[in-house]
Length: 175
Length: 108
Image (cartoon, rainbow over all chains, first blue to last red; front, top):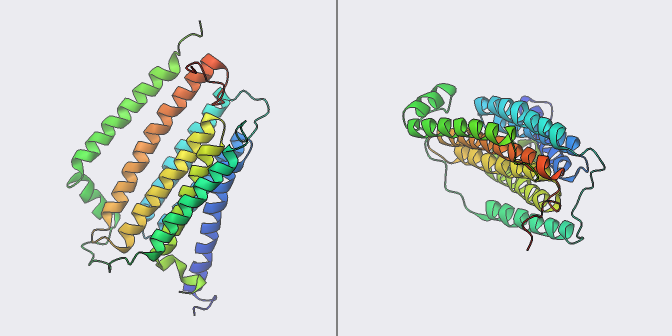
């Protein structure tokens, strides 16, 4: 049993807090009747996920999560809400009454199945680490083993920039 | 396995990721606006990334693999969000609504 008043105990407490932030943010993101609050919940959830990445010994990916998701994706969604929100009352939920129970049932079933799968499976013992997973190792792997993928994803991002500019600049007229 | 020691077990992260995935699926079916569905899809991608990171930390011999995969997922998600939001803005310009049930021109 770990005492609360040691470094490990405090880290465990912080971990529980981060898990609560992640799950709470996700619940706000899907359940809020107003879109700006949903985006705020999404940002809170991503801050929590960044904390989980930190506990997984990956501070670099945690920083990238904060930069890309909280800093870029959420802000972009906020701009889209400003440009495309009709502004009147945002009713949450579908007009048909079955969407909420069916959605809850499917989500709960998938959660239960995947959680049971993760818990029941006997995972193999951890293999010997060939490196420490530091930022230096990530950089070396990115320009050696994953160089082709790195080039391809830069092409995808360039196409996405051009495509979103073309799409958002001139939509077809209603006539 | 005490409650303060949870961050050192693979199963904890798998359950959190499954919970995020379930919440994302629920939001995808429950939300009415396209932006709400986009937010739910981001949650699903975050769950997938968390799984990759957990397996990379606990089981893989090369811990950089999962981190790099997560970085690529982030890139794809950013591209997807940019394209989806510009499509949503174009739809709003045509229909003056982002409600999924108002955009029904192709209804038979």
